[in-house]
Image (cartoon, rainbow, N blue to C red):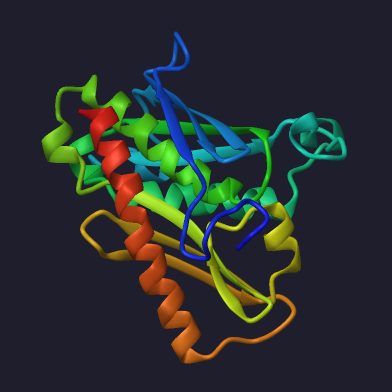
Length: 233
């Protein structure tokens, strides 16, 4: 039994509060246990220059940790004058995940910007950001009245890892920081894989362990997809 009294195959309690912000076209506050992320979607009637005249839309994301979202205060990157490599990598992951779920030509020459602000971090901020961003994106697109044409499927993400040679799902910070192997899985609700990130932090993994984590992540995401579906509909 884990410190959180969860089994190895049990995710944290997930809560999503939709329309959390008054002014954003789509928004939600998502919680995975003690990790909380505010996600907001903004629709703009323009696209990046490289897409101008293509008839194709675009989705991009920005991600940030608020200073006291962490146990020790994290300096604002705007004060430092540059984004960290971690921040850039996470926001690119969020953007890729969301673009995979949308028919960008049906969106037309519009850009949707997703803002993910972590207000409390206890592991799994990138996966929570993806799950929350999917809700914010879908709520925003509903306002366009073209949901069925634009959306290919819902997007979900969850972490898995190997800790003390045991496979765990949805790692909190303590588990993640001590994991021999750390992995993140991003899926469409159709079961198709969007992205897999798996790294031997302090150890290595076998083919069997990787496939077991993949299967566990896919299974555990079904509850999250159900929650997303209920909120969006």
